[in-house]
Amino acid sequence: MAELRSFLELSYDELEQLNLQTKEERMSRITEEQAREKRVKYLTDEKRIKAVTVCFTDLEGRLHMLDYDKKFLLKNHDNLSFDGSSIRGFSQQHESDLRLKIDWSAFYWLPSDVFGPGKVLTFAEVCARDGGLYVADMRGQLRAYMNNVYKDSETVLFAANEIEGFLFKGKDAERHYHETGKFDFISTGGYYHSLPNDPLRIFIDRAAEAQRAMGFSNEKDHPEVAPSQFEMNYSYTDMLIGADQVQLYKLLCRQVAHNLDMTASFLPKPVTGVNGNGMHTNISVGKKGKNIFYDEKGPDRLSKIGWDFVDRILNNADDVCLVLNPSVNAYRRLDPHYEAPNQIKVSANNRGAMVRIPWGNEKSSRIEVRSVGPDANPYMVMYTLAKIGLEGAANDAADNDKKTRTRFLPDNIYDAVKLFKQSRFMAEILGENVQARFADLKLAQADRCPKALGSMIKPSEIQFHHEVTNQYLWNQF
Image (tube, helix red, strand yellow):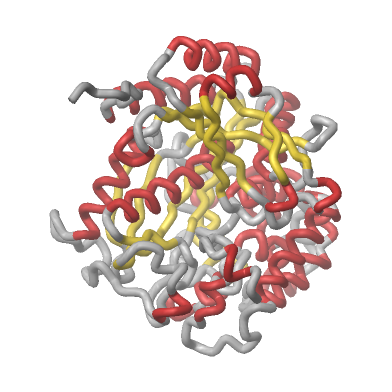
C-alpha cells in the first residue's frame, strides 16, 4: 500500500544539530525580527510540517500546549487568542480574551518517536487585549527583565537546573492515587545503581537521548538516592533558555515514561520514608563574557558580587519560600531527616543549607539554591531569584540575631503563604495583583488537604496538586 503521509521525521543527530544552532542564535541575542523572518521562511518552505505546537505556562507553572495547523499559523501568528478564564490564576471571566505572542527564537525540532511526526514546537508569551505583556505570565516577565538587565549593563544571568523525579509503574499513577493510595516502584537499586537494561535505565537512556536531540547539552544522567528516582544533568545556559528547558525536561520525561507504560512524577515528596525530589537551581552572572561570580582569592572562590547575591537571597528567604516550594506536598520534602535544604544559611558542604557554593573555576563558579521543588514555576523562580540577587535588600550589619542563630524555612504551606502575602518585596517583584492571585491559588490547594498532615502521604495532597491532570476532580471538591 502506498504511503499516504509524508511528515517530517529527522534523526536524533539532525535534531541535535538544528536545535543547538537555534540555541546558539538565542545566546547571541538574535533579534525578534530576525528570528521571526527565519522561522516563517522555514515553515513556508518545509512542506512536511503539519502543525506547530505553541506552549505557554500558567501562574502555577503548568505547561499548556496548543497545536496550530501550519498554514493557519503562518497567516494568523500575530492574532492568536485563547480563553484565559479557563486557566487557574489567569484572567477572570470578564477579561477572558488573551493573546499569544510567539517567541520565534525559542523554536524546537521534535523527536518524532516522542511527539509524533511532522511537528515543531515554539514558546509563546501571553498578552492582554491591549497587546501589552500580561501581568501573570512569568515567562514574559523574566524575558523582559533579562533584556533590560542586558541593555543597561551587558549583564547576562545563567542557570542550570538539577531536576529529580520518580518513575512509577503504570500510566497516570498520580491521577489514580486517590483510588490506589500508593505508588509502585520500578526499581529499588538506589544511588547510581541500575543494571544496563532494567526499566529505570531504559527510561533514563531514552529520556536523555531525547533531551540531547533537543539541544540540552547533557552532561550526566543516573539513578538518584531514593528507589526509582532519577536525575539528568545538562549544561548551564541563558536563564530564560534554562527555564524553557525545565518545562521541556518534565514534558519529555512524562511522555517517554507514558510510552513505556510508566509515570514520571515530579511531586516533591510522593513516598513516605525516602528522599524527595528537588530542583537545585545553579545561578551565575556574566558581564562582557566574564563570569563575575569568580574570584580566585575570594572565600570559596566566590567574588563579593556573588556573596552579595547569596546574602540577599538568605535575607529574603522567608518571603520567597512559597515561590520555591508552592505546594502542600513540597513542605514534606523540607524534612531534615532526608538531606532537606531547609536551613537559611550558606555552606560549601552542608547539604542542609538553603544555598551551597560548589567548587568552581572562572567558567563554572556559581551558587546553588537547593531549596527549590521540581513543581515550582521555573520562570517565577528564575525571575524572583534574579531580582532578589541583583536588587534585594542585604542583611543589616547590626542584625546579629540573623547571623548567629540557625533559622529554618517554613515547614508548612500556611506559614509560607502568610509570609509571602506580608512581603513588601514580593509585592514589588510580582506586583500586588499577581502576589494576591498566587497566594489565593496556594490557599485553595491547601484548603483541600488536612491542615495536620501527619507523617503519611495523603491522597488529597496528590489529588489536588497543581501538576496532576485532575481538572474534573478539582471541580468536584
